[in-house]
Structure formats: C-alpha cells, structure tokens
Length: 93
Image (cartoon, rainbow, N blue to C red):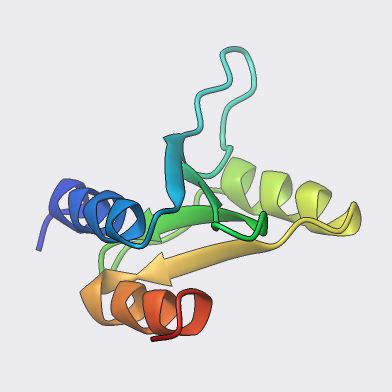
C-alpha cells in the first residue's frame, strides 16, 4: 500500500473526529514529520508515516530525537494497521 494512500486515510479520519491534520513543511529543515495532529482537546502529536517496510532516514531519526528531547510527542506509524491503532488510541469512541 502506498504511503500517500495511508496519509490520505489518516487526514480523512482525523478530520472526521474534529481534529486537525496539518501538513508539516519546513523549508531548509529536512526530516521533519509528515503531519501535525491537533486533537479537539488541544493535544499535539507529530506523525511520520511509512509503509509497512519503510525506514526512517538518518535526518528523520535526528529530527525525531531533537523534538522528543524537548517534550514533543512524535510517532512513526508503519502501515495502515498502525494508523488505525493510533486513531483508536488518540480518538477513543
């Protein structure tokens, strides 16, 4: 399954739950996560999406580490099953 399909699914489901799913673009600062998710209660989570067999680049690992050192909630989700589990955790029914 393509990463773009997984990403569009995540965006659609977060919006259905009244959250924001913003594209994280930071020119001149490579390796930042794909998406910033803000839940209806204000929780912020940074999400990097990968296919089931995808791997983080070294710069992505470094960015994640730097963000986590500062208290950011950064997730790497591998495939559709991980996205669905994430949605159940963050947006419980």
